[in-house]
Length: 350
Ligand code: PEP
Ligand code: MN
Image (cartoon, rainbow, N blue to C red; front, top):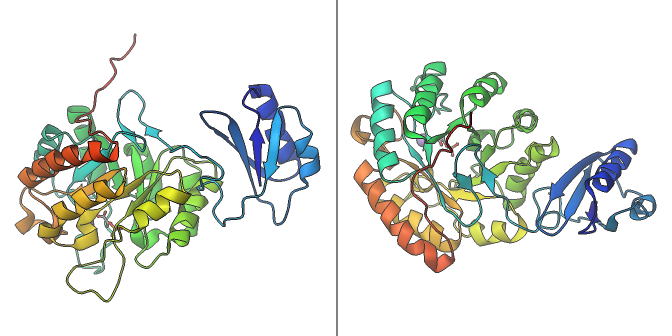
């Protein structure tokens, strides 16, 4: 259910409606919009008695949300969600494209700094790098852990880049939340419901990658798990799904872009690196992703991919990344978007 407040409803009236919902034993999710605030109701098994709610001051109407996902749906919030990063002009969602670039794994301070310097120079706003890696083989490189998180925090200080890295489980979730700006939940964890709920209790943006065989609804239900706990800063990331096609590591499903943008207000990034697994396919798919209406790109970049400890074959070179930036900058205005390069940090106020 959804309570739509009148455009002139006061903060006190909004609070009173939330209190009433909680008194009924449900959870209230006030979602401010440009025109009016809507309050999502979750935790109800069936229909909520709308009579009482409709007569509360400031309430315009009470409507039923028929989709399985509610807080993630445009029925509840019409306008696009824009995620902001305090003290910077970096955003994810909205008119400006977001570009996340960096190696699959943080391998050393030297490697991470070299790549960060190059992606920052080309205008990325976000730096990615795995500290905890979900590897198919237990014998493969598992990540540098806390040391990698510390290296990325230094990179943020040095280059202004905001940091995105993956949390594998509850233990690493707390550490990632402490050190990073965005918590990544990987494809293999998209249906790890307890991890999603825990991420929902934090107040840090969460990037959820699409599961290897997840439908659009399952993908949005993963976002819903995070949002149902009160964390509304969720970013979706399409990274390819398993199909019978064997010319690529995964099949990058760009057809999900218009389908998701239609039903959800959440920002959507495309990962053409895991989505194809091939360096020569990354740039064409990045161009196509922006043309299709994605809110940005998450891409693996490595200065020496031939010796990378993970995902070398799909990592592009820094000069290819610079080309990608130029290309998406040119495509952006055709789809009414802009590519702002670099991160401006607000001067600290005394
Ligand atoms: C990654 O981003 O490096 C990663 C492991 O991604 P995914 O969960 O999509 O496989
Ligand atoms: Mn990778």
